[in-house]
Image (cartoon, rainbow, N blue to C red; front, top):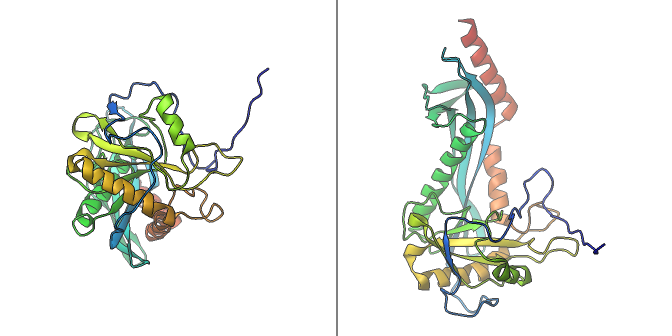
Length: 322
């Protein structure tokens, strides 16, 4: 029997794995060109670069306050939810980090294309307004997907606004929701789902040292064409799998190859400085310090989940009596 080695996925069990790639020769519907940067397929050092005066990190969080079933006398099972999102940014300037543009929005989302009126909950001296929303699908996860899409759209709009005043905006997640094809924001993907590379090319990702990146490769996929690269921001521990500590980053292709290379080098030079400790954040090093702090503040601003849940139950109980 061949000897096997067991490696740890360092993210805790309550989170989905950071490494979800199933196979390397899968069809992703995208064309990949790994020679676009015009250099050999070898690790790229950050090199000399001009650090931006301002750096922004943009992220958001979501929370299901309560799931509901809608009765419209049709006999169908129509799912919905009361959900809250919060989003904002961290500005880093002259080694000082501050929260910027922190916002909270709440939604009542129904499946099957149904949209209802806004619902207002009274909690103490505060009114919480849940804006109406709908999704065309009616599967069990459809309302949650709708809430996720609303959060991503708000994050993208904020990042696009901030990019007008800063040369470097790191946005959590892929740039799918960004409208501008010349958008200069950098998408930071910490959970690897698609490899985009062949197994032979992906071997380089496993060998990267902290601060090294792969050469750029271009992902051609209709209106979402983008340049991408892998960057190691922290070395795995001996018992961890060899892709722990790796991020995938991307920029829209409309900004041009030269601009993409510049931002790739800036990311390799900047991001490792924002890596937290394993014992402080269970998703470190991929979940960067500014992002982890922002998530914590945003969750606080969502309010007390138990109080909101009780207010929803009281609202629905009162409606059922009438």
